[in-house]
Length: 315
View 1 (cartoon, one colour):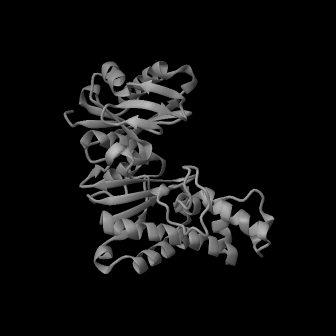
View 2 (cartoon, rainbow, N blue to C red):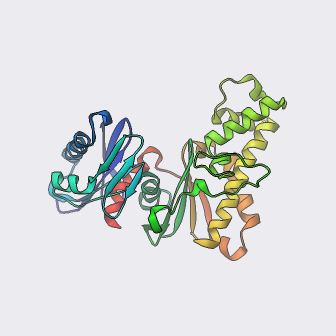
View 3 (spheres, rainbow, N blue to C red):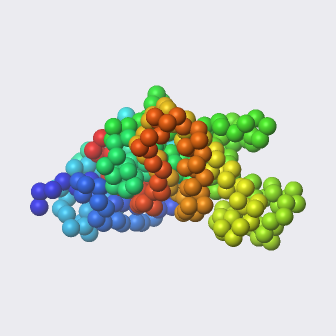
């Protein structure tokens, strides 16, 4: 067999997931095992190398076909040098990850931010397949994102491009503090955390809603109530969708992507979320910046990270 394969690593605080992809971005095999971050970075790097070799050995391919290994992780990174400055979920500092893994594996290695990598995964092998320019939002506990231009992750100066959840978009009178230290960020209204916060506020105000009978409230509870016709829940959903649509309208005239991809747990709500996003986008985006542009749900789910990490080797 002569086809090249690409290996991706999704480095999480509790689990390391490895994926083997073919040259078309198809995920052909995955392997998961514990991170054991508390044992330190040196042991962790060795564990990653072992897991990569195991994943390839279990796949239909041979080690000699590996073109390279990419890794996605949260934290502060020096991406060009492949250096982990600090990873808060691992508590690792000053780790020359690229250098160590290349020595252990004997193949090229790249690292990148986990949100960027997930965006690249959708662009290469998911909802953005065949689309060179797209913007991805991940709606979970926070709002992550990634910008893909001409098939490549746009990192910007200092690697801060794509921090889409921290666009300050909510008006001052309605803005609340964000974990980043600013106020009015998209993350405060369009994430699962933001949706739950708005629901709790409504209940505390005494608004008439079925959510008053739910404890604890989750984002899914809000969407379920909205689908059942609860007016308060619908108001919250529409507010989350409105600000996401406004944020996309801004991106449309800055980056002009062909497609917006929305992933993460919140995106599973379906049309009750996507229709008001699209309506707001159409309302606030100039005609020429929205023509031919679509807004679609992500398709890779939890596999986006390993697929995107593997795709780093094609950048």
